[in-house]
Length: 147
Image (tube, rainbow, N blue to C red; front, side, top):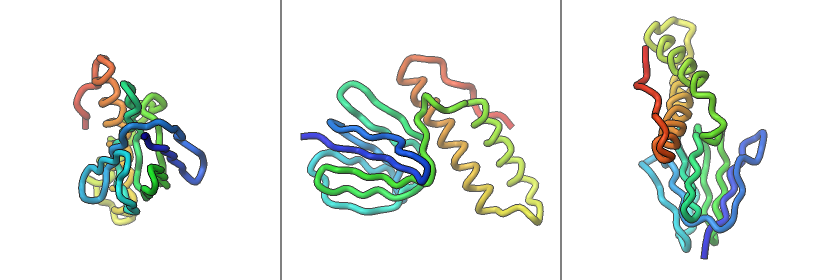
């Protein structure tokens, strides 16, 4: 018995697979692991790295929040934004992180603090997904985040 997983955003279907063994998602109270026969569940997810395990393969997806529904070995994730680790441009993600941190540090009057914090969380999730994928595949992880 396995899971069917679908991850969708307003723009696209990001992931759709059957025969998934396990899913680990960043929940609002910590990481949430889902295996077959999981109890029905509907909860919010927070920015982070979602991991999908299918046999010996693992897929990392940077996700910026949304909802997860688990029912009858079927998982549906409605994500604000989601991006597979292999599709992430790490240089762009690093630049987005630096800009968001700079805006937070400057604390200008017109800065929407919640928006900048969301941008920072998204950039960090993207960087973490790429780093995790590179480590798992034996590649050289990027250096520590710079200023």
